[in-house]
Image 1 (cartoon, rainbow, N blue to C red):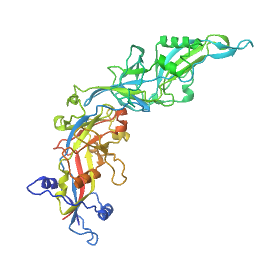
Image 2 (image 1 turned 120 degrees about the vertical axis):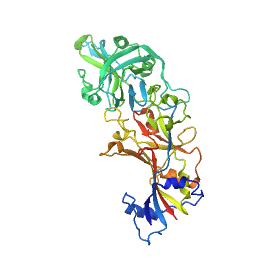
Image 3 (image 1 turned 90 degrees about the horizontal axis):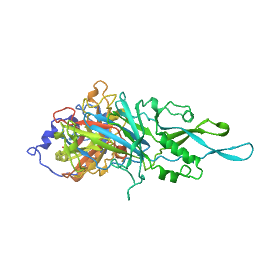
Image 4 (image 1 turned 90 degrees about the vertical axis):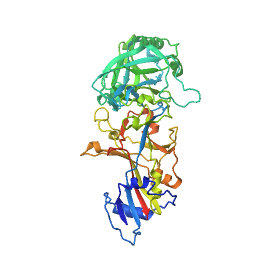
Length: 496
């Protein structure tokens, strides 16, 4: 048997004058695969293998010259609720335009806000009334960010003025969901994003009334704090003692970035890391002036979500043309580029129109391995602002799709039968030659067995289960004349 690297093979098999299409029986060469794994040199130079192992009429061909058609599509409904973290902010991308994320959340009462009681001159317990000191909003970073951290950022906090509840027959909120809110802000503050230092959280220190390090701390409107304290002092008012009544009084908040913001930040909702804190103190009896506080936490529930907006009208490739999910924007119309973007929901659609013609080779044949190879466009990423997903071990997934661009089913790993995901292959010496690969062996085999329909295609995407909570993006090169175009690298066994 010979191992042959035949880069001209696709021209031969795609030329109808040279080959006649025929349906053949698919044969899986299990024993051959074992031999290839043990003798593979990675170079596919010619080797002779003992004739007692396999007939010399069998060849292994490495084919990477298939033409790949690509386009960009956009999902119209992406779930953005119930994640363990919040995406908030705004950034401007040279390829993908402006992206904005507002956060809507429910602020709970926490524990009942009760007055402290004290014994006055051994005459019995009495309520100790309190006075308002200050109201602040506290949020921590989980160190994830996207964009420029050097510029000053701005956050406004608004009070939602309608009940945050799921629409009828819905179980989640989407990127286009929103609620009415008060145009007058509860807070308007500027800050510099320092994701590393602003992630520092220690429960003991955080519960110290004098603690002012770690996290982002924003002073809020005194009027809200004064109203809450008035309700605390009125023991007949259950607003601050019953969570259901509190949520009727205070429906929720929305965090909004300014037009000039340049970064998307990720805020965790676990362990009381996002909250409104009301500082107060006793105004009578034995502990007058002793500082205290009460926290109103924003917790991870199915009632919090991100609202995404995006302006792509000024993008070099005019990506604003993609409006409906069923629309394909061919890479031929976008400078031979395809796009993947979390939050907004851009996916890359891939068609391999000639892969079925492998069946025209020899008497029988079978796929040993088929990898989809794709490259990020050189100059579309950097180490500081627009980082590659592979730098944070984010994987791409791939699904079969149809003419309506719906994700139908995951491509499964032929060895584990679990959904495949991409592998990032960095090249330290030539970083611009780093690439991603994803195993599509089962997909190609299925086409060779059952035939190929005109609508057969693949969707390359960030994991769909986290797409609405992702800051990652990728600009994929697919210039037919480039060495870094999308490729299908197929190892094919053929019986002559």
